[in-house]
Length: 248
Image (tube, rainbow, N blue to C red; front, side):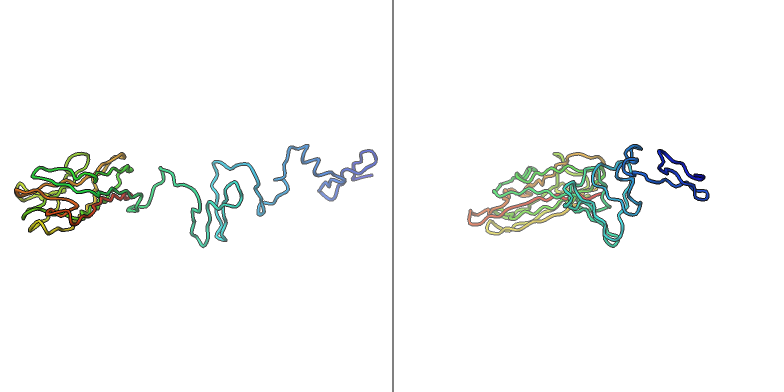
């Protein structure tokens, strides 16, 4: 018949105006013959991905609250709601760049024993703490000495060391030979004081491990004691050093 193509008396093609219509077509078989999978039947605004992977492509999360799940299909990894994207599950990689002045990590060391220190600058044992930081990070050092005492009136001088030497810029710049980072005076062996100090180290330019430790010495002829009363063992305390890394 004009306008038709028949195969074995079965109409396969029909002309309709300027269009050609396929008749009696097994669509599933033809998709298979053409090498098309199930994606061929999905519309652009209603695509369901149930396997495989996507690489090298940006994924836009819609403001309706779209969620990306782990392979188990139930654990939310990334979600968006009202313009806010939330990382629900996972680990932040080491190469992630944080906004400026955000805390990246916190580490601590504590000293629970006593120590007697004389007139030579000596490291306070138990308070040496290392931290591995990123390039150009800043480190906030928080030192708290629970008890500082002396058997007689004495000046107690303290210093901040990094990597085995006094950290540049942390001692008084226009005083005598007793320039130090922070200090205390103790009247007698039955008195003790709590000494605290904070300092922000902004001199780091290279990524790596940095070790901080408070040092101390007596400015008088008698020793000073850390974490215990000089007169006896009637009371004692603990001391801590806390390091916080801040993003550049």
